[in-house]
Each structure stands twice: as C-alpha cells, then as structure tokens.
Amino acid sequence: MKYRNLFLSIVLGCSTSLCAQNASSAKETSGNPIFEGWYADPEGVVFNKEYWVYPTYSAPYDEQIFMDAFSSTDLVNWKKHPRVIEKENISWLRRALWAPAVVQENGKYYLFFGANDIQNNNELGGIGVAVADNPAGPFKDALGKPLIDKIINGAQPIDQYVFKDDDGQYYMYYGGWRHCNMVKMAPDLLSIVPFEDGTMYKEVTPENYVEGPFMLKRKGKYYFMWSEGGWGGPDYCVAYAIADSPFGPFKRVGKILEQDLSVAVGAGHHSLVKGRGKDEWYIIYHRRPLGETAANSRETCIDRLYFDKDGYIKPVKMTFEGVKASPLKKSR
Image (cartoon, rainbow, N blue to C red; front, side, top):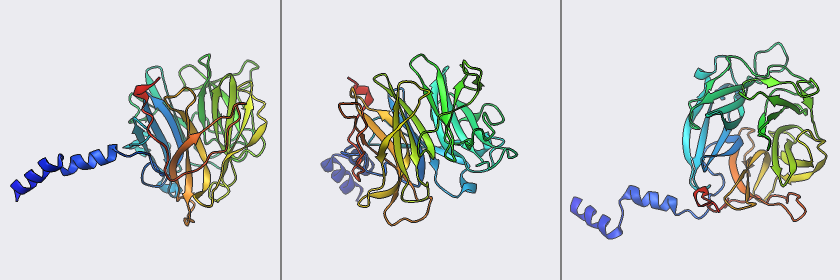
C-alpha cells in the first residue's frame, strides 16, 4: 500500500499536505469573510510590506479578554496569530477589550485598545496602550492604567484611531456615545500633550456620528470617517467628511458603506489599507451575514474602495468574492 501511495504522490506531483497548500495559494480572491470566526472592528495596517488585521473578538463582553491578529502578504491568504494581547498582560482589564489601533514607531509596535466599557467616571477603564517588539505580540500594557479614563465632552473612551500626519505628529481620534474627541500624542505615544491653545481635548463630532472614527490623508485632503446607527442592528453603516485640516471642521458628505439585502447587513466599523498600486485602496470592515440575528455574529470582510475624479469616495459594493491578490513585495 505504501508503494502505491508513493506512486500516486509521484504521479500527482504532490503530497496531500502540499496539494492543500497549493490549493490555498491558488485562490483567486480572498473571499468574504477573509478568515473564520466572529470578529469585528477590524484595524487594517501595513507593516514591513505585509498586511495585518487586528479585530475585536466578537463575543459577550465578559468573554472579550483577548485579541487575535491576522497577517497576509497578498490580501488573499491569511495567517492567524492567536492572543497577541490578553488579560494576563493588562492588570486592569476586566471585560470588553475592544477595537484595537496599532502603529509602528520608535522601533516598537503600539496597540491602543478600549477596555471595560465604562459607564461613568467612577469606573476603572477606558483607552489603554500596550507595546511589543513584534506585530504578532505579545503586547504588554505599557502604563499599568488607562491612558484616557474619563468621559469627556460626552465621549465614552473607546474606539480610538491613531493617525500620523505628514509632519510626523500623531493624533488620536476616539469616542462612543455619539461624541468624538481628538487629542495630541506625545512623541513616546504613551501620553497626551496640550494643543497649542493649551487644551487637552477637542471635540470634533460630525453630523450623525456614533462611533468608530478613522482618518486618511490623501492628496492634501483629510478624509474623516465614522460609523452610524446601532452596532447590533442592520442599519449600521459608514459615512465620511472631507476637510483641509486634521482639526476639521468635518462636514458630512454621505454614506460609503451600508447594508445590502442581497449580501449582508450591519456593515460598519472599518479601516482602510493601501495596496501596491498608486491609488489602490481597500476597506476592511465587519458585517452580519443574512439570517444571523445575534448582535455578536459579525465577520471581517474586505472590498475595494474607489475615489472619483473629484476626490469623493464612491459607495462601496459589498461582495462575497472579496478582492484579488495585491502583494506589496511587487510594489510599483
């Protein structure tokens, strides 16, 4: 029998495991979702010519005490990195570990997170920061306490996005409960510093804002995006504004991602990554499959995002196919 199997392997040109690998690498598109499991609030980022996605583990709040990450060289084939951050490395985490934002700076990787879903200023929780030497972690709490632990300007301290402007200055946009604040980061990314006018927090809430802010600078313009609607319902969606400054004002332009009753509902809390092309963009977001009614039944998906000739964002078409490969090592 073993000789027969050896003969078949030679004839077929591969072992069973090798055939499986070849089948995986032969995928023409990513498919949606891009990886298995319930995951939400995906932060897409590029590190060292490799795509990374850091999502929230979508589960009841008390079970949200760790985060996985996923990496890909081409947007089609994804590798799981389990528990890149977890409760054991955050002394003050109790529950509700949410919506990571990850940046590479100072020779380190910084993962900002929301924790504990605080409802008032007497509870322990808010936005924290963890640091690692590798994008796959392990990330360890850098402060032993939250970086932002109070509800200021009505904004619950969750859903932070950390944005680096062209001059090297980092800003954080964050906030739930229909309010968005902006803060200025210190060079070490472990504290916030005053703006030039001496204030520490600036409210930049646009019309219809609910949560999930994201910022992109393209061709000199600041594209500020956010999620609207209820995260547990079908009407969750993404809208955006365009400004000439990172401080706004952010006047709402319109929606760019929303439910499609032929594909999925509850589409929102997104991020963008740039592919290898000159103006090649991808939106990474979560959505709820048709027929799923549980709030936490959210999956991470990817589709193309396009700008029109005037610089406006075209509405995103959700797909089951996902996207084709865009390996950054072949950058033009």
